[in-house]
Image (tube, helix red, strand yellow):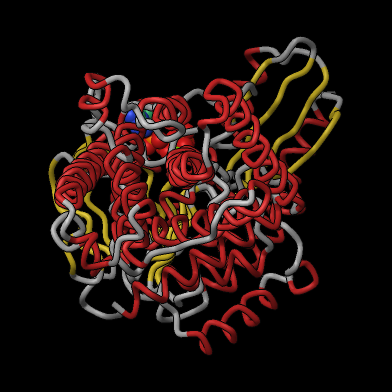
Length: 264
Length: 322
Ligand SMILES: Nc1ncnc2c1ncn2[C@@H]1O[C@H](COP(=O)(O)OP(=O)(O)OP(=O)(O)O)[C@@H](O)[C@H]1O
Ligand SMILES: [Mg+2]
C-alpha cells in the first residue's frame, strides 16, 4: 500500500509537470469546455423556453462535468499508451521495481485526481456563471468515484487493445465523444425510453443519473446507499473495470509475445 | 569470479508470430559479475530480441532465462529489480520533463528511497556531466545528452546488470567517443555486469571482455575479446605496398617464393601487395627487391586487421569493397 501511495504521488507530480509544459493547451481546454457548456445550455434554454429551470441546469451541469472528467481520463490514458510505446517509456515501466499493473493503477489514480481537480474548477466556474446553488452531498463523491472507475475500465479496454492492434488508441476520442450524447450527460434521456434502457449498459449513464437523484433530493449518504441505482452502478462499474483489467492483462501478454511493447 | 552468473540464457529460441524464421535460435550465453559482454551481429541478427528477452520484455518461445537466479518468465518481478536497461532507438525518457524530473520519476518507479535518490541523482548527473542541464527539458537535449541521461536513469537503482542496446546509435563521432569513455568507466565496476550490443566493432573491442557474435539468430562465435582477436590473427600487422603498373605473373611468383605469405592484388594500373605478419627487416628486404626489379613504389602502409574483418568473415558477409 505504501508503495502504491508513493507511486501515486510520483504520478501526480509527473501529471502536473506535464500540465506545466502544456499549460496553454490546458488553459484553452478549460475555456473551451466552459464556453461549450454555456453554449449548449443556452441552446436548451432557447428550446425549452422558460421551463428551463435552475434545477434542470444543475442536472445538465452535473452530467456534463462527470462526462468531461471521464473524457479527460479516457483520452489521457489511451493517448499516453501510444506515446509511451513510441518513446520507449512503456518498456521502462515494465522494468520498474513494482508490477507494471501497480504502476498503471497509480497512474490512473493520478490522472483521476488531476482531471477531478480540473472538473471541479470547471463546475465551480459554471455554477458561479449560471448562478446555480452550490451544493455537494457526500453521497455524490462516492457515486462520482464509482462512475469514473467504470470510465477507466473503458480506457483500459482501449489501451489493452492498442497494445495488440496498433493505432487503436485514437478511438479513445470517438468513444468519449460518443459517450457525451449516448449517456444523456447533457440532457436526461427521459423522452426516449428505449435509448434510455440501452444507455444504461454504457458506463457513465447510471452514475450520472444517480448523481442527479442525489442532487435533486439532497440525499444523504445513507439514502444514496438505499437507491436501487446505486447497486446497478456498482454492477456496471465492476463489469467495466474487470473487463478493462482482463483485456489489459491479455494485451500486455500478447505484446510481450509479439515484441510490440515498443513500436517505432 | 563468482560461480553463479548474473545472467544465464539457456537454449533460448524466439519465434515471432507470423515470422518465417526464428529471430533467435537456440542461443545460450552467460554473464558473470564484473564482466562486459558485447553482442555483435549484423542488422536483424537477433541482438535486440535477445536483450529484450533478458529484460523480460519479450517472452521466449522456448528455453530459459535466469537473472540473478530468477526465471524471467515465472518470476520476472524478482529478476527485473536487478536490471537497468537502455533500449535501442527509443528515447526511454519523457520528452517534456526536465532531466531532473525524469530522473526523479524513474527513481520513484524503481522505489529508490527519497534521500538515497537525491544523492544518487547528483552523483549520476556529475558522472555524465549533465549538472548544468538538469532543469532543461529533455526535448532540448542533443542525442548524445539524451542517451547519457537514459543511461543515468537506468542506473538510478544501482542495478547489478546494465543492458545497453546500441548505445551509440545515432550519435556523431565525438558524442559516441564520449559515451564510450563513460561506459568504459562503468565497466570498471566489479559488481556490475554489462551486456551491450553494437554495430561498432571498435566499441565492442574496447569495452567488452567477451564477444558473442550472432548471425541469423544463431551463435557464430563466442570468446574472450583477446582470444577472438588472436585466433583470427587480427593483431598482426598487415603491410600494404602499392606499386605502379601491373606486375607480371613471373614477378609475382618470384615474390611469393622469396617472401612467404604475400598476396598481389592487381588494380587498374597499380598492384597492391599485401603481407600479413611481416617484420621490419623483412619489409626492408622486400623494398630492396622491388627496387632492384625497377618497380616504382607509390605507397607503403601498415595497418592492423580489425575486429570488423573478423566479424565479416565469421558472418560470411561480403567485405566492403577493397
Ligand atoms: N516485434 C517483432 N515482430 C516480428 N518480427 C520481429 C520483431 N522484432 C524483430 N523481428 C525480426 O526478428 C529478427 C531479429 O530482430 P532484432 O531486432 O532482434 O535484430 P537486431 O540484431 O537487434 O538488429 P538491428 O541491428 O537492426 O537492431 C529480424 O528478422 C526482425 O525483422
Ligand atoms: Mg537491434
